[in-house]
Length: 550
Image 1: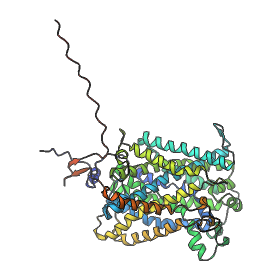
Image 2 (image 1 turned 90 degrees about the vertical axis):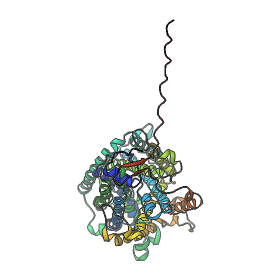
Image 3 (image 1 turned 180 degrees about the horizontal axis):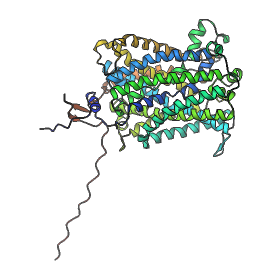
Image 4 (image 1 turned 90 degrees about the horizontal axis):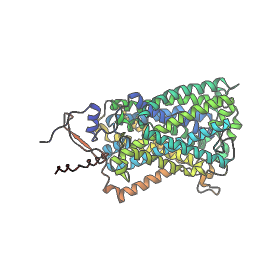
C-alpha cells in the first residue's frame, strides 16, 4: 500500500488545495509582502518620471486634484483584487484567478496582458532610473570612461542614458539571481527609504525656495501645452479629452501592486497577508504621492522655464532648489527607482515562472525550472532580455533627444496591467454569490465595488489610448511615428494572442496544472514538482577487487 506523507502546514495545505506543491521558499512576512508592492508602485519613480504628462495636459489642477480622485478609483480595483488574492493566494495571480472564475481562454488572455505589463514595468522603471541617474551625474559634471555626462548633445544624452539603463538592468538581474535572500531585506529597507525620502523631498521643496505658488495656482490653474484645441483650457474638449491624457501620471505610478499576489507563495499567512499587501500598498502610496506632488507644484514658480524644458519634474527641481538640494532630491529618487526596478523584476519573473508552470509560455519546460537556491533563474533572465529588447528604440529617440519609446512603454505597460487586473474582477462579479471568498472579503459590497472598478478601467483604457499631441494623430498631414501613442498596441497584442488561442493554444493550454494532491486531512497523496530536479550525480566507479597474491 502506498505510504501517505505527513501533514503539511496551513499555507502549504492551502496551496496544495489549489493544486501546487510548495517549491518557492516561504520566508516573507506580511510587512515584506506589502513592501514589494509599495516598492514597485514607488512614488519616487512614477510621480517624478511621468510628471510632465499631467503638467502638459491639464496643469496643476490635473495633478493636485486629479491624483487623489483617481487614487480613490484605483483603490476600488485594489480591494477587488485583494479579495481574489485572499481566496486564491498563488504566484499566478490574475491569470490563475481568471482560469478558476472563467475558464482557460480567459486565463490565457489575462496571463499575456499581465506578462506584457510586468515586463513593461521593468523596462520603464529601469529606463526612468537611468534618466535620473544621468541627470544626477550631469549636475556633478562627472566624466566616466571617457563619457562626459554634462554633455547636452541630445544624441549623446540618449546613448549615455541607454548605457546606464543596460548597467541597471544587469544589476537587477544579478540581484534577483544571486541575492534572492536579500530581496526581502531590500524591500523592507525600500519602504523606509521611500517614506523618509518623501519627507526629505517635501522639506527641501518647502524650505529651500525663496517663494512658492499660492493655493489658487496649485488647485485651480489649468495648462494645455499639447498643441490641441489652440491651447484653450475651457470647454468639453479640455475636460473630456485633454485632461484624461494626464491620467498616466497616476495610473502608471499606481501599478504593480499585484506583486503581493505573485509573491504569495513566498509569504507566511498569505490568505490575509498578501490580500492586505495589495490594497495597503495603493492606499499608502496615494497619500505619499499626493504629498510629494503638492510639494512639487507649490515649488514650480518658474513656469516658462519648466514648460520650455518639457514640464518634467527635473526642471521643477533644478529651478526651485539650490544645486546641493537638487542633487539630494535626484539621489533620493534614483535610489528609490533602483529599489523599484529590482522588485519589479522579482514580480515579473514569478509571473513568468507561474505561467510556465501551467504550460502557458513558449519554452515552459525551461522557464518553470528553479535553481538550487529555489530561484526561477531562467524566468528572471527571460524577463530581463525582454525588457532590454522593447527599450532598444529609446536608444535612438528623435532629433531633440526625446526618448519617445520610453513613454510608449509606460503607456503600454499601464494598459496591459489594468486589463489583466480587471478581467478576473469582471469574472468574479459575473460569478456572484457562487464565489467562495477567503478570510479577507468585500462581503455584500463586492457588487458596487466591482462595477465601479470595471467602469473606471474602461475610462482609463480610453484615456491612455488616445493621441497625446497633434503629430500623433495618424490621419493628420504632420503625423510622426515618434509622436504616436503606442498604448493601443496592447489591444493589438490582445487580438493576436486571441487569434493564437483559437488557432493553436486552445488545444494545448489547459489552464492551471496540478502538481500535488491531498486528502481531506491535508496529507499529501501525490506530488510532482513543477521544476524538475537536476539528474542525480553518477555513482562513483567501483574499484575491482585486489588480485590475490600468488
